[in-house]
Image 1 (cartoon, rainbow, N blue to C red):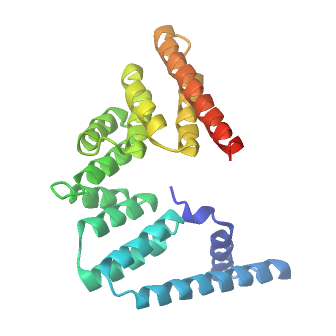
Image 2 (cartoon, one colour; image 1 turned 30 degrees about the vertical axis):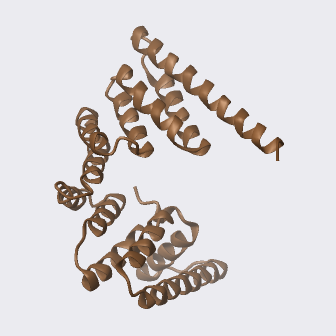
Length: 244
């Protein structure tokens, strides 16, 4: 899934390019809007390039690429990873970022190869995590659970990893096994993240077949516990705000 193409500015630029290549004509207002979007993108790109050119340490450049990926600029981050590795060589950190970007831009095969190269490095947990996400994207949730458990053994306090493991377990029908990592994820992260975990309880509760009452009952218990924890977190946050 490419999050970069969900940005309206990016979509306008892409549509404008496609219309130009196809020789199509559109209303004048559309061309003006596309031109404005192109100018904004060009300004952002120029600013990023200037920032990259002034960076003289590998760690600072890694932070720049990380911020680009946080902003959903996965395609652009790949170009900067190339530049980074030309200057300082390949590192586990740059390989992890490359693998994540390749996964997000639909290059699953290349992403898998890059994640595998992280096995045996200090970022081995990230390698197994990424491989687990790729397995889940293929619909192989049993394999996803196996790989995510390998990642968990190496990084037991990563809330995002724990949430992914719990979700994969639910999709694999392992409801009892999903309880622990999902509850850990709920307690390890912020309220916004806990809300995301809670929504996974809701999804599982709604989509489980009614013909499996025992499984549905187990998910219902998870759902209620997740809701209780979420409400407690909200009350604590409200109390803290009022006490200021």
